[in-house]
Image (cartoon, rainbow, N blue to C red; front, side, top):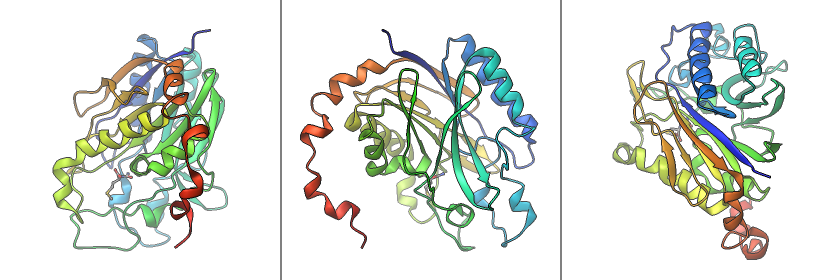
Length: 303
Ligand code: CDT
């Protein structure tokens, strides 16, 4: 039986700080409909896809302006049109958003929604980059360590599309351990959303490698775990800050098979045969046969 999943990487251009949720959802709907028209079974949207990348702004504890960036229900009144249209079209999607739970916990989350509109699962970002205190020397802040708790769901893999689907969020993609946690569960397709400023204030010498590093880590993650990877940017100049694009779909060989070319709302679409993972998972990356975990203690020992 064929296990071909047609996937659309739904890159977003910048979202202005004053852009309304309904306005952003209209943009998501346009991408969703266009993807469905190209035969997509699954549409992958970026990290924090409903708002501007608000961790660039400093807020004091308890400032209600901070709470306004989070979703307290999913779907809520503003996002329900996306669920309704995806269900009508019979298309699954993954979507990044800022989650504020009833218990008051805050997570950088991605949700995977099936073609019938039901929640397949969610992932809460584990590798939170940046800093927790105001650092006025920076031209812009990166306060993920302040505004989000470390994810508490581990690295789940979900049964869907007759295969195994995982999610990572932005900075997670730079960590081989994150990919390997999914690889050890037999993941066959990893959905990744990202917001990556072109300029990294603590390490400006890395800036010219931003696009290269983005593809390097995702292509390595794909190959080393024998999995498809779909990496999707929120790209372009957002509130004066440039973000990389380069959204792409990566084969288990590590090669890019489809890629966005600009920095605005755009789709990259590819038919992903989940069976293409088999020759990698059963030979050079047969993890059960070739790994040597007894020698890897330093990786997981607490310092
Ligand atoms: N959103 C996110 O995780 N961005 C980071 C920026 C790193 S620099 C603090 C990334 O890894 O792309």
